[in-house]
Image 1 (cartoon, one colour):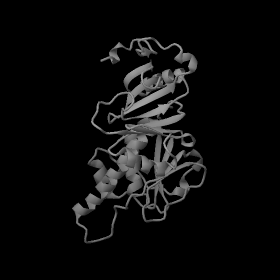
Image 2 (cartoon, helix red, strand yellow; image 1 turned 120 degrees about the horizontal axis):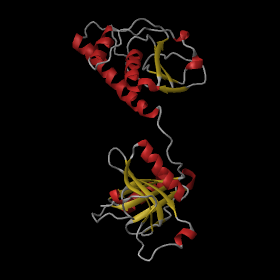
Image 3 (tube, helix red, strand yellow; image 1 turned 30 degrees about the vertical axis):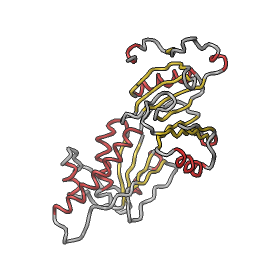
Image 4 (cartoon, helix red, strand yellow; image 1 turned 45 degrees about the vertical axis):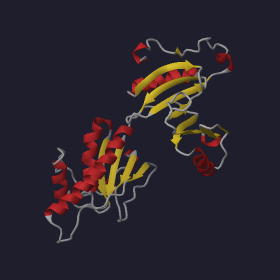
Length: 289
């Protein structure tokens, strides 16, 4: 991927972005920066970047008119109140509005000016870190439905609110939960009473992705292993509660994610008498607690 950062003077924000992106992306992307009225790399930008071990003194300000638009895959503008330069062509575009840390205000102390540049540097770095995880992310499972289960304190009031928000009545409800279905959004949304009772397969707070069939669940497992996702439980078929082929993952904050497929009638006919789960991959013992 070829990434271009743009601002007006190509002296501070886009230069810091270029240096940060080179450090984060490594050889996974080609990174450059330019401006509509290029000047020179701001010495304060050089100083605050050196504080984090990135040295940009050798970088040069470049005019956007010198850029070969045919080579750019992603252009990111960092202007805030200024008029951003325009790069013609059919490229992916992002806009990160970052306040210009440079200032001609003579009343600013050196520490105050450094603080402005550090703030801009850190705001850009947070965005670059996210982009660094996206530029070569592998393809995930092909989802057909998004499921989420949310615990609420007052089921009646929450059902009223979400009926308004989703513009539909729940498909069904009991004294403990209500299920909303919006097929046009691929949404399966469950509200559950937060009554302090033990969570189980019908009341577990989690997110979920519905896929087509058992093979898609196994494929999601293989993709998760390649990606490096935390696998909480490997693919298995369960019959208690809602009969499903399911895979459980955990996101970086510990939120459970269920990737599931509903059983066909033929698969339902194979339900064992003990209704114990049947694992769909070899060697699941390390996941059993």
